[in-house]
Length: 83
Image (cartoon, rainbow, N blue to C red):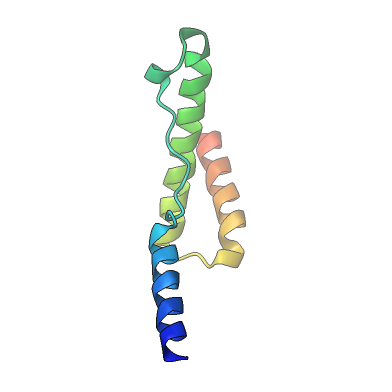
């Protein structure tokens, strides 16, 4: 029975090590898209940068997960109003 437990632990450890960590969406690189899509890629990258800025502010302000969506929406609206 002890051998089965050791085998289970080893298999579990390998499975956990093999799974990729969750990552945020990669930033769009406008230089790596076709010229006809470059303007859209630049706009998407700008939006991603705004979202990351607000997420960083939320992290620094230690916003609780239940309040994070409201905080992020407010932050994005504030940035849009400044532009």
